[in-house]
Amino acid sequence: MLFCSQAFLIFFAVVFAAYWASPSNRLRSGILLCASFTFYASWNKWLALVVGVSTALDYALALGMERSPSDRRRIAFLAVSLSANLGLLTYFKYANFFLDSLEGLLHSMGVHAGMPTLKVIIPIGISFYTFEAISYTIDVYRRRIRAERNLLHFLLFITFFPHLVAGPIVRARDFLPQIARPKRWDWARMHLGVQYFLIGLFKKLAIADRMAAFSDPVFAQPESYGSYAAWVATLAYAIQIYCDFSGYTDMAIGCAHMLGYKLSPNFNLPYCARNVSEFWRRWHISLSTWLRDYLFIPLGGSRQGAWRTSLNLMITMTLGGLWHGASWTMIVWGVLHGALLVAHRCLRAALARATGLDNLLRSQGGTLVRILVTFACVCVGWVFFRATSFAAALAMLSRLAIPHDGLGLPVSTVSFWATLFLGASCQFLSDRGLWTRLVARLPEPVLGFTYATAFSLALILATEASQPFVYFQF
Image 1: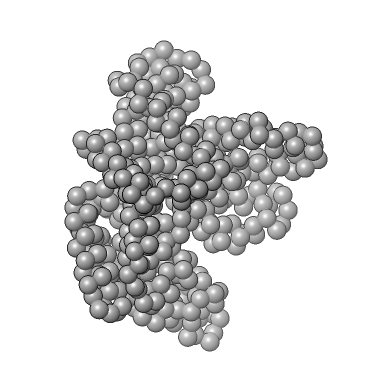
Image 2 (image 1 turned 90 degrees about the vertical axis):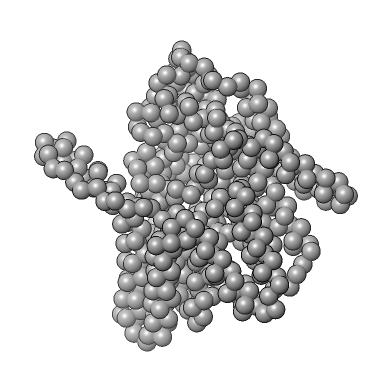
């Protein structure tokens, strides 16, 4: 059930009514747990069972880990949990990728061996809830949190349907206390939830899905299109993936607020970032902080010299690329961002010795240049992220760098440039804090009319066939 579909709106309305009509917090938690499994089982009931079984296993292992006095046994419990979670992730998401890569490697060496193709269905959101389970067991092992005693509460932590399939990645220490906390109806929180949901709905239907009309045809056959079409498609995809993913996150946060829960924000105007390091503090925040806390820092972080820090960054971002998808283009995307982060650290060290140039880059004009350069680097990365193959990615990059003749876009680009201008203006207003101050001063009737207008425009501008959320595949 897509968040922007009629089926989900009906589903959420039923859950919402039953939830707030329930007299006790325990019953409300039970309703949310049943709703979460129903939500996932509506796609595939057997994979919902897999999620439930793996979650119950992590629950038992964490309890055993906490109660064990022996460090060796605690490590053993942690190893079983990590092996089970990563094993499921590898089997469902990466097995065929590794087999295909091995077959290609053998063929390049002159060995013709046919690898089997596993007939598996990748569970939606497996990367998200796997990382949530891993962070929980590691935190219990580190004694940063206590193991959850209530199995139903732990199941709800993993399967809570607003964040189940595309995040944000939730930490146990943030979410589990909210389950036990009594919920009371709050009109202000309800208003905030509706606001988040409408903003996300508008991003998804009115912007992201429409941008797909400019990006999809070109990325499908980049060799057939000219440079102008390639530039429009690349910029359109940058807008699409941001509005699609942040739109989903806004709707997830909104649904959670309407049910009395708080999810962490996952985006903070990433295209206003002044460097690639700042971009990753603003984009997919729950993933970047997870990679920092559970991969980069355990590898040594930035504590062991420049060379080791660079290596740790490359390993972290390469695995981050692999997390996004089982393909070599995704790995290259991760390697590219790792290289950009290393380059930024080197440049920052050089600028520390060149104070004149550093002051120039920190001026208003220099800041604008840094934002544009960062955005250009991110867009180059999006080419590998979106392309279906290396050949397609290289064809796109060649058209971006060198003028090529070819087909033009089959649709008018007037709406694209208007969307780009309005989006950039909204980003600027939000980055300066002007948007928040403006909304705070608007009378309630004006805000209500604005929300109704946004909802109506989302429905009017929606494409005939709604696109699935981009991050559902991860």
